[in-house]
Image (cartoon, rainbow, N blue to C red; front, side, top):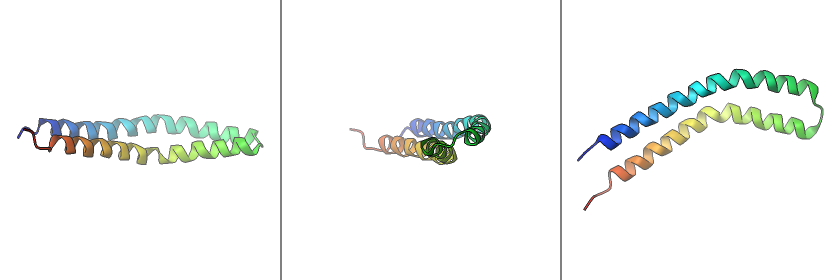
Length: 85
């Protein structure tokens, strides 16, 4: 059985994790000061709710990257290990 597909999938999984975290490291320091400054200048409830949503999404980003990478790895493993005629 040829395992190049699974090897490529594992490499893609690790590349997804590394690139996702590099992107997070770049975006997170830029977004946090914006949220802090916006929080000081807004008093509306809807604006505060939106800022909390963005802050929560930013905090969950590493888990989302790992989940999507894992899903890709699992799906590719399922399709690579199926019996071929």
